[in-house]
Image 1 (cartoon, rainbow, N blue to C red):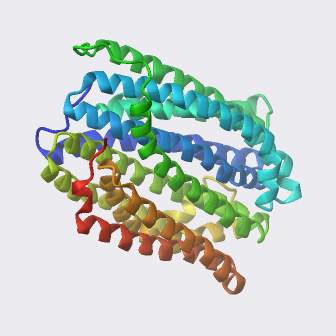
Image 2 (image 1 turned 45 degrees about the vertical axis):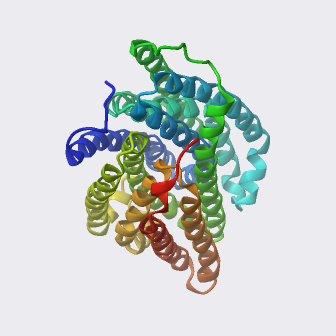
Length: 445
């Protein structure tokens, strides 16, 4: 059900609202983790490396889907918080139309550029066929990725984090089963893993959109019938979406550049990195999802003019995400080797050791990047996108440059060291902008 986040106990609201979002993202991450796990365990190390290699390119599509989600959810949250039902409905239909066009364009571009993208990141010849096979099938399902993210983002904007969780719990569990079935029973390879993801993400997307349509019909009509499309509202959505898309896209491009450095060290390092980065991304994406919850909370309260609740929401978000980050660090430092064995067989010693080195270096700094993500969420909720962009680009550019420089004399360890340094720089910048208080004066038009 829809939830007004502008009233009630802040801590209770945020925890009850955000925890289902976290659960949703954990299940969402099972899609990619299941692909890697099944590929590594049932097909082999090369298959794991190929899926991990392709994953860095799929992050570009995820970046566009995430940015579109943010543009829609922030505007819808503000209209919902302000009680403007007509504008809220127009924002939703406008978003779906624009998203359909964007998804089609990106699908066509992806189909044409698959081989070029894989060559750009120095994909080893022996992995090219499997990587291309996985990536092509993934691209066919981009439209499902977009519509699922938009639908769940709108549910979240209206204060409902439970519905997206239920969809994902079902579909991601089914994806694991289909992954294993396609490889073991049907004798398929990487293509079977990719088709399982395609089918399950398609089902969850369709169900989410149908549920959203039903929800919108249950919301009482405004005094004046809502427009089906509005260029004015689209402009407001784009104002939030483009910086979010650029942020995530540049992160994806940066990750692709880093992947190209990783690839230069061979298949064993690639496999270790593929497993470890999935675990790392699961944590970062989970924290980002908490940030999305804080963003929706902040946007509703900002739309209602309740700045004090926005500030308190930031503090509660830091507490929630900080607790999760410290737990993840403890888990990876103490049990990282055993977790990596879920992806690889015990005889892949070199790959396992490489993954352990990555986790030992990066995971202690989750508390740092968590602070940046939650602070960025508040800035984004109020429409203050410039500092949000500056902190992210500073982090990314520094990480990419240091990965190239450090790897030249420290080997693969030099690549892993670039993460904590970049995160620290970005966090300092983000906190500086938040403390300045400029975001309190920003108004969406």
